[in-house]
Length: 404
View 1 (tube, one colour):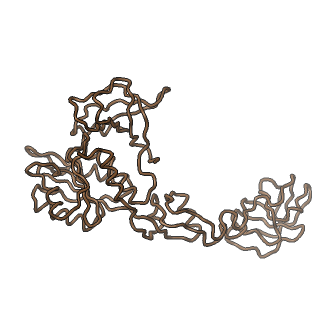
View 2: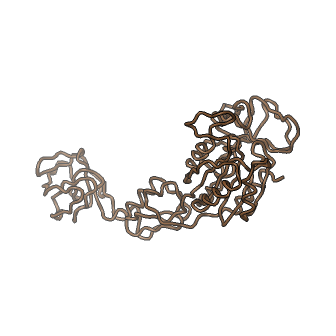
View 3: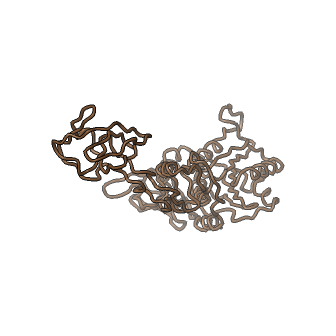
Protein backbone atom coordinates (compact mmCIF):
# COMPACT_ATOMS: atom_id res chain seq x y z
CA UNK A 1 0.00 0.00 0.00
CA UNK A 2 1.25 3.50 -0.85
CA UNK A 3 2.52 5.48 2.13
CA UNK A 4 1.54 9.03 2.96
CA UNK A 5 4.93 10.41 1.86
CA UNK A 6 4.96 8.36 -1.35
CA UNK A 7 1.46 9.49 -2.30
CA UNK A 8 2.32 13.15 -1.85
CA UNK A 9 5.52 12.77 -3.85
CA UNK A 10 3.73 11.04 -6.74
CA UNK A 11 1.23 13.89 -7.01
CA UNK A 12 3.68 16.77 -6.74
CA UNK A 13 6.09 15.25 -9.25
CA UNK A 14 3.34 15.59 -11.87
CA UNK A 15 1.94 18.95 -10.80
CA UNK A 16 3.25 21.92 -12.80
CA UNK A 17 2.41 25.62 -12.88
CA UNK A 18 -0.52 26.43 -15.13
CA UNK A 19 0.34 28.26 -18.39
CA UNK A 20 0.55 32.05 -17.81
CA UNK A 21 -2.34 34.34 -18.69
CA UNK A 22 -2.70 38.13 -18.55
CA UNK A 23 -5.29 39.27 -16.02
CA UNK A 24 -6.48 42.70 -14.84
CA UNK A 25 -4.87 43.95 -11.64
CA UNK A 26 -8.21 43.67 -9.87
CA UNK A 27 -8.08 39.88 -10.36
CA UNK A 28 -4.37 39.35 -9.64
CA UNK A 29 -4.17 39.55 -5.85
CA UNK A 30 -2.55 36.44 -4.39
CA UNK A 31 -1.39 35.06 -7.75
CA UNK A 32 2.23 34.62 -8.79
CA UNK A 33 4.00 36.65 -11.44
CA UNK A 34 4.89 34.49 -14.43
CA UNK A 35 7.69 36.71 -15.77
CA UNK A 36 10.05 39.43 -14.57
CA UNK A 37 8.39 42.84 -14.61
CA UNK A 38 10.61 45.83 -15.41
CA UNK A 39 9.69 49.46 -14.81
CA UNK A 40 8.61 51.03 -18.14
CA UNK A 41 9.16 54.53 -16.74
CA UNK A 42 10.51 56.42 -13.76
CA UNK A 43 8.63 56.47 -10.48
CA UNK A 44 7.83 59.12 -9.51
CA UNK A 45 7.68 60.40 -13.08
CA UNK A 46 8.66 63.98 -12.10
CA UNK A 47 10.30 65.75 -9.17
CA UNK A 48 7.59 66.90 -6.76
CA UNK A 49 6.88 68.23 -3.31
CA UNK A 50 6.63 65.83 -0.39
CA UNK A 51 4.85 68.41 1.81
CA UNK A 52 2.40 71.28 1.77
CA UNK A 53 4.62 74.33 2.10
CA UNK A 54 6.79 76.73 0.10
CA UNK A 55 9.12 75.86 -2.79
CA UNK A 56 12.23 78.01 -3.19
CA UNK A 57 16.01 77.94 -3.44
CA UNK A 58 17.58 76.47 -0.33
CA UNK A 59 20.21 79.22 -0.20
CA UNK A 60 17.44 81.83 0.27
CA UNK A 61 16.21 80.28 3.51
CA UNK A 62 17.59 82.65 6.14
CA UNK A 63 16.02 83.32 9.52
CA UNK A 64 14.20 86.66 9.63
CA UNK A 65 14.37 87.28 5.84
CA UNK A 66 11.01 87.89 4.17
CA UNK A 67 10.56 86.20 0.77
CA UNK A 68 8.00 87.24 -1.87
CA UNK A 69 5.42 84.54 -2.71
CA UNK A 70 4.60 84.48 -6.43
CA UNK A 71 1.48 82.29 -6.22
CA UNK A 72 0.16 78.84 -5.35
CA UNK A 73 0.88 75.56 -7.10
CA UNK A 74 -1.58 72.69 -6.48
CA UNK A 75 -1.15 69.01 -7.28
CA UNK A 76 -1.97 68.41 -10.93
CA UNK A 77 -0.82 71.89 -11.98
CA UNK A 78 2.43 73.12 -13.48
CA UNK A 79 4.12 76.36 -12.44
CA UNK A 80 3.60 79.48 -14.53
CA UNK A 81 6.52 81.19 -12.80
CA UNK A 82 10.14 80.23 -12.40
CA UNK A 83 11.39 80.56 -8.84
CA UNK A 84 13.97 83.36 -8.99
CA UNK A 85 16.38 84.33 -6.18
CA UNK A 86 14.42 85.83 -3.27
CA UNK A 87 11.04 84.38 -4.35
CA UNK A 88 8.95 81.33 -3.49
CA UNK A 89 5.82 79.50 -4.58
CA UNK A 90 3.28 78.09 -2.19
CA UNK A 91 3.08 74.38 -3.12
CA UNK A 92 0.89 71.41 -2.29
CA UNK A 93 1.98 67.81 -1.76
CA UNK A 94 2.54 66.05 -5.07
CA UNK A 95 2.77 69.19 -7.17
CA UNK A 96 5.73 69.36 -9.59
CA UNK A 97 8.67 71.23 -8.14
CA UNK A 98 8.87 74.52 -10.08
CA UNK A 99 11.93 75.38 -12.13
CA UNK A 100 14.56 77.18 -10.06
CA UNK A 101 13.44 75.63 -6.72
CA UNK A 102 15.35 72.88 -4.97
CA UNK A 103 13.81 72.83 -1.48
CA UNK A 104 10.38 72.76 0.17
CA UNK A 105 9.78 74.18 3.65
CA UNK A 106 6.67 72.76 5.37
CA UNK A 107 3.88 75.25 5.97
CA UNK A 108 4.00 74.73 9.75
CA UNK A 109 7.69 75.74 9.85
CA UNK A 110 7.02 79.22 8.46
CA UNK A 111 5.45 82.55 9.20
CA UNK A 112 3.50 83.73 6.18
CA UNK A 113 0.96 86.13 4.77
CA UNK A 114 -0.90 86.32 1.48
CA UNK A 115 2.17 87.19 -0.61
CA UNK A 116 5.13 86.72 1.76
CA UNK A 117 6.83 84.07 3.89
CA UNK A 118 9.53 84.03 6.57
CA UNK A 119 11.57 81.14 7.93
CA UNK A 120 12.27 81.23 11.68
CA UNK A 121 14.58 78.18 11.43
CA UNK A 122 17.06 77.03 8.79
CA UNK A 123 16.07 74.14 6.46
CA UNK A 124 18.46 71.75 4.74
CA UNK A 125 18.84 72.29 1.01
CA UNK A 126 16.87 69.61 -0.90
CA UNK A 127 14.52 68.90 2.00
CA UNK A 128 11.00 67.58 1.36
CA UNK A 129 11.57 66.97 -2.33
CA UNK A 130 10.79 63.67 -4.06
CA UNK A 131 13.03 63.35 -7.06
CA UNK A 132 12.00 61.77 -10.36
CA UNK A 133 12.98 58.10 -10.40
CA UNK A 134 14.03 57.95 -6.75
CA UNK A 135 11.61 55.05 -6.23
CA UNK A 136 12.16 53.20 -9.52
CA UNK A 137 14.32 53.97 -12.53
CA UNK A 138 13.23 52.94 -16.04
CA UNK A 139 14.26 49.33 -16.64
CA UNK A 140 14.57 48.49 -12.93
CA UNK A 141 13.31 45.08 -11.79
CA UNK A 142 9.97 45.65 -10.10
CA UNK A 143 8.81 42.07 -9.49
CA UNK A 144 10.73 38.86 -10.15
CA UNK A 145 9.16 35.75 -11.60
CA UNK A 146 7.38 33.79 -8.88
CA UNK A 147 6.59 36.82 -6.70
CA UNK A 148 3.21 36.61 -5.00
CA UNK A 149 1.14 39.68 -5.81
CA UNK A 150 0.28 41.45 -2.56
CA UNK A 151 -1.59 44.78 -2.23
CA UNK A 152 1.60 46.89 -2.38
CA UNK A 153 2.66 45.13 -5.60
CA UNK A 154 -0.73 45.87 -7.16
CA UNK A 155 -0.33 49.54 -6.22
CA UNK A 156 3.18 49.78 -7.68
CA UNK A 157 2.09 48.19 -10.97
CA UNK A 158 -0.84 50.60 -11.22
CA UNK A 159 1.45 53.58 -10.56
CA UNK A 160 3.59 52.42 -13.51
CA UNK A 161 0.60 52.27 -15.82
CA UNK A 162 0.50 48.47 -15.94
CA UNK A 163 -3.17 47.52 -15.78
CA UNK A 164 -2.66 43.83 -16.60
CA UNK A 165 -0.09 41.30 -15.39
CA UNK A 166 0.91 37.83 -16.58
CA UNK A 167 0.33 35.29 -13.83
CA UNK A 168 -0.27 31.60 -13.26
CA UNK A 169 -4.09 31.50 -13.01
CA UNK A 170 -6.27 30.07 -10.30
CA UNK A 171 -7.22 26.46 -11.11
CA UNK A 172 -10.91 25.71 -11.48
CA UNK A 173 -11.74 22.82 -9.18
CA UNK A 174 -14.92 20.77 -9.59
CA UNK A 175 -16.35 19.36 -6.34
CA UNK A 176 -18.60 16.35 -6.88
CA UNK A 177 -20.41 14.48 -4.11
CA UNK A 178 -21.68 11.00 -4.86
CA UNK A 179 -24.22 8.97 -2.94
CA UNK A 180 -27.92 8.07 -3.05
CA UNK A 181 -28.15 8.89 0.66
CA UNK A 182 -27.31 12.59 0.27
CA UNK A 183 -29.77 15.45 0.36
CA UNK A 184 -29.31 19.21 0.27
CA UNK A 185 -28.63 21.19 3.43
CA UNK A 186 -32.09 22.77 3.18
CA UNK A 187 -33.88 19.42 3.08
CA UNK A 188 -35.08 17.28 5.96
CA UNK A 189 -33.40 13.89 5.54
CA UNK A 190 -35.70 10.90 5.11
CA UNK A 191 -34.99 7.43 6.46
CA UNK A 192 -31.37 6.48 5.78
CA UNK A 193 -30.52 9.90 4.33
CA UNK A 194 -28.02 12.54 5.48
CA UNK A 195 -27.34 16.13 4.48
CA UNK A 196 -24.40 16.68 2.13
CA UNK A 197 -21.70 18.51 4.10
CA UNK A 198 -18.84 17.56 1.80
CA UNK A 199 -19.65 19.76 -1.18
CA UNK A 200 -20.09 23.05 0.72
CA UNK A 201 -17.24 22.24 3.11
CA UNK A 202 -14.74 21.30 0.40
CA UNK A 203 -15.78 24.24 -1.77
CA UNK A 204 -15.00 26.52 1.16
CA UNK A 205 -11.61 24.86 1.57
CA UNK A 206 -10.79 25.23 -2.12
CA UNK A 207 -11.76 28.91 -2.05
CA UNK A 208 -9.51 29.60 0.93
CA UNK A 209 -6.65 27.97 -1.00
CA UNK A 210 -6.99 30.68 -3.67
CA UNK A 211 -8.44 28.38 -6.34
CA UNK A 212 -11.91 28.60 -7.90
CA UNK A 213 -14.38 26.11 -6.45
CA UNK A 214 -17.07 24.85 -8.85
CA UNK A 215 -19.74 22.78 -7.06
CA UNK A 216 -21.47 20.13 -9.17
CA UNK A 217 -24.88 18.62 -8.59
CA UNK A 218 -24.83 15.53 -6.42
CA UNK A 219 -24.34 12.31 -8.36
CA UNK A 220 -26.40 9.20 -7.87
CA UNK A 221 -24.69 5.85 -7.32
CA UNK A 222 -24.87 4.50 -10.84
CA UNK A 223 -22.19 3.89 -13.43
CA UNK A 224 -23.96 6.06 -16.01
CA UNK A 225 -24.48 9.02 -13.65
CA UNK A 226 -20.88 8.97 -12.43
CA UNK A 227 -19.46 8.75 -15.97
CA UNK A 228 -21.62 11.63 -17.20
CA UNK A 229 -20.68 13.82 -14.23
CA UNK A 230 -16.95 13.08 -14.57
CA UNK A 231 -16.99 13.95 -18.28
CA UNK A 232 -18.86 17.20 -17.62
CA UNK A 233 -16.57 18.22 -14.75
CA UNK A 234 -13.36 17.60 -16.67
CA UNK A 235 -14.67 19.54 -19.66
CA UNK A 236 -14.92 22.73 -17.61
CA UNK A 237 -12.33 22.41 -14.82
CA UNK A 238 -8.63 21.65 -14.40
CA UNK A 239 -9.04 19.54 -11.25
CA UNK A 240 -11.82 17.22 -10.10
CA UNK A 241 -12.40 16.26 -6.47
CA UNK A 242 -14.94 13.49 -5.98
CA UNK A 243 -16.22 12.42 -2.58
CA UNK A 244 -17.42 8.87 -2.02
CA UNK A 245 -17.55 5.96 -4.42
CA UNK A 246 -13.80 5.21 -4.32
CA UNK A 247 -13.84 2.09 -2.19
CA UNK A 248 -14.80 -1.44 -3.24
CA UNK A 249 -18.49 -1.55 -2.39
CA UNK A 250 -21.25 -2.61 -4.77
CA UNK A 251 -22.19 1.03 -5.35
CA UNK A 252 -18.68 2.50 -5.58
CA UNK A 253 -18.38 3.40 -9.25
CA UNK A 254 -15.87 6.27 -9.31
CA UNK A 255 -12.74 4.13 -9.57
CA UNK A 256 -14.37 1.81 -12.13
CA UNK A 257 -15.53 4.68 -14.34
CA UNK A 258 -12.13 6.40 -14.26
CA UNK A 259 -10.40 3.23 -15.34
CA UNK A 260 -12.92 2.75 -18.18
CA UNK A 261 -12.26 6.31 -19.34
CA UNK A 262 -8.54 5.57 -19.54
CA UNK A 263 -7.45 7.63 -16.54
CA UNK A 264 -3.88 7.01 -15.37
CA UNK A 265 -3.80 5.83 -11.75
CA UNK A 266 -1.06 7.35 -9.61
CA UNK A 267 -2.18 5.29 -6.62
CA UNK A 268 -5.25 3.92 -4.90
CA UNK A 269 -5.35 3.29 -1.18
CA UNK A 270 -2.88 4.93 1.16
CA UNK A 271 -1.55 3.54 4.44
CA UNK A 272 -3.15 6.27 6.52
CA UNK A 273 -6.07 6.84 8.84
CA UNK A 274 -8.36 8.53 8.15
CA UNK A 275 -8.40 8.47 4.36
CA UNK A 276 -7.24 4.96 3.45
CA UNK A 277 -9.55 4.54 0.40
CA UNK A 278 -8.05 7.58 -1.32
CA UNK A 279 -6.96 7.59 -4.96
CA UNK A 280 -5.50 10.01 -7.46
CA UNK A 281 -5.70 9.75 -11.24
CA UNK A 282 -4.86 11.94 -14.23
CA UNK A 283 -6.86 12.18 -17.43
CA UNK A 284 -5.94 14.45 -20.33
CA UNK A 285 -3.45 16.24 -18.09
CA UNK A 286 -6.03 16.93 -15.36
CA UNK A 287 -5.91 15.72 -11.76
CA UNK A 288 -8.74 13.67 -10.28
CA UNK A 289 -8.73 13.28 -6.50
CA UNK A 290 -11.03 10.54 -5.25
CA UNK A 291 -11.48 11.25 -1.55
CA UNK A 292 -13.59 9.20 0.88
CA UNK A 293 -17.19 10.15 1.48
CA UNK A 294 -16.83 10.46 5.25
CA UNK A 295 -16.51 14.19 6.01
CA UNK A 296 -13.36 14.11 8.16
CA UNK A 297 -11.09 12.22 5.74
CA UNK A 298 -12.54 14.26 2.87
CA UNK A 299 -11.39 17.52 4.48
CA UNK A 300 -8.10 16.07 5.69
CA UNK A 301 -7.21 14.73 2.21
CA UNK A 302 -8.04 18.09 0.62
CA UNK A 303 -5.85 19.88 3.17
CA UNK A 304 -2.90 17.50 2.99
CA UNK A 305 -2.87 16.61 -0.71
CA UNK A 306 -5.06 18.91 -2.79
CA UNK A 307 -3.85 22.15 -1.21
CA UNK A 308 -0.12 21.74 -2.04
CA UNK A 309 -1.04 20.54 -5.53
CA UNK A 310 -3.13 23.62 -6.25
CA UNK A 311 -0.41 25.88 -4.87
CA UNK A 312 2.14 24.32 -7.21
CA UNK A 313 -0.28 24.76 -10.12
CA UNK A 314 -0.51 28.46 -9.21
CA UNK A 315 3.27 28.79 -9.35
CA UNK A 316 3.71 29.23 -5.61
CA UNK A 317 7.08 28.15 -4.23
CA UNK A 318 5.99 27.45 -0.67
CA UNK A 319 3.66 24.46 -0.74
CA UNK A 320 3.46 23.16 2.82
CA UNK A 321 2.10 24.41 6.12
CA UNK A 322 4.58 25.07 8.93
CA UNK A 323 5.60 21.98 10.86
CA UNK A 324 6.42 21.91 14.55
CA UNK A 325 7.08 19.41 17.30
CA UNK A 326 4.48 19.64 20.03
CA UNK A 327 3.97 18.06 23.44
CA UNK A 328 0.85 15.88 23.35
CA UNK A 329 -1.06 16.65 26.51
CA UNK A 330 -3.54 13.78 26.56
CA UNK A 331 -1.82 10.75 25.05
CA UNK A 332 -3.03 8.40 22.31
CA UNK A 333 -2.73 4.77 21.21
CA UNK A 334 -3.85 2.54 18.34
CA UNK A 335 -6.38 -0.17 18.86
CA UNK A 336 -4.21 -2.65 16.94
CA UNK A 337 -0.98 -2.40 14.93
CA UNK A 338 -1.87 -1.39 11.36
CA UNK A 339 1.25 0.20 9.84
CA UNK A 340 -0.73 3.32 8.94
CA UNK A 341 0.14 6.97 9.45
CA UNK A 342 -2.55 8.31 11.76
CA UNK A 343 -3.60 11.92 11.23
CA UNK A 344 -5.02 13.34 14.44
CA UNK A 345 -7.04 16.54 14.77
CA UNK A 346 -5.47 18.65 17.50
CA UNK A 347 -5.73 22.02 19.17
CA UNK A 348 -2.30 23.63 19.59
CA UNK A 349 -1.24 26.40 21.93
CA UNK A 350 2.06 28.04 22.79
CA UNK A 351 3.34 27.70 26.34
CA UNK A 352 6.52 28.89 28.03
CA UNK A 353 8.13 25.49 27.42
CA UNK A 354 7.08 25.32 23.75
CA UNK A 355 4.15 24.15 21.65
CA UNK A 356 1.49 21.90 23.20
CA UNK A 357 -1.28 19.94 21.49
CA UNK A 358 -4.37 18.10 22.66
CA UNK A 359 -6.86 16.02 20.74
CA UNK A 360 -10.07 17.73 19.70
CA UNK A 361 -12.06 14.80 21.04
CA UNK A 362 -13.26 11.60 19.36
CA UNK A 363 -11.26 10.97 16.18
CA UNK A 364 -13.84 9.03 14.17
CA UNK A 365 -14.16 9.67 10.43
CA UNK A 366 -17.69 10.98 10.83
CA UNK A 367 -17.00 13.37 13.73
CA UNK A 368 -16.87 16.58 11.69
CA UNK A 369 -16.77 18.75 14.81
CA UNK A 370 -13.23 17.44 15.34
CA UNK A 371 -12.25 19.51 12.28
CA UNK A 372 -14.21 22.52 13.52
CA UNK A 373 -12.08 22.74 16.67
CA UNK A 374 -8.70 21.82 15.15
CA UNK A 375 -5.91 24.24 14.27
CA UNK A 376 -3.43 21.48 13.53
CA UNK A 377 -3.05 17.94 12.23
CA UNK A 378 -0.70 15.64 14.14
CA UNK A 379 0.99 12.94 12.07
CA UNK A 380 1.80 9.73 13.93
CA UNK A 381 4.18 7.37 12.05
CA UNK A 382 2.84 3.96 11.04
CA UNK A 383 5.15 2.04 13.37
CA UNK A 384 4.10 4.05 16.44
CA UNK A 385 1.59 2.13 18.57
CA UNK A 386 1.21 4.58 21.44
CA UNK A 387 2.00 8.16 22.41
CA UNK A 388 2.00 8.59 26.17
CA UNK A 389 0.99 11.86 27.74
CA UNK A 390 3.87 14.32 27.29
CA UNK A 391 5.25 12.63 24.14
CA UNK A 392 6.45 14.70 21.18
CA UNK A 393 4.37 14.67 18.01
CA UNK A 394 4.82 16.31 14.59
CA UNK A 395 2.05 18.81 13.84
CA UNK A 396 1.04 20.57 10.63
CA UNK A 397 -0.21 24.02 11.66
CA UNK A 398 -3.28 24.28 9.44
CA UNK A 399 -4.22 27.87 10.23
CA UNK A 400 -0.80 29.32 9.37
CA UNK A 401 0.58 30.24 5.96
CA UNK A 402 2.94 27.92 4.10
CA UNK A 403 6.64 28.37 4.87
CA UNK A 404 8.36 25.65 2.82
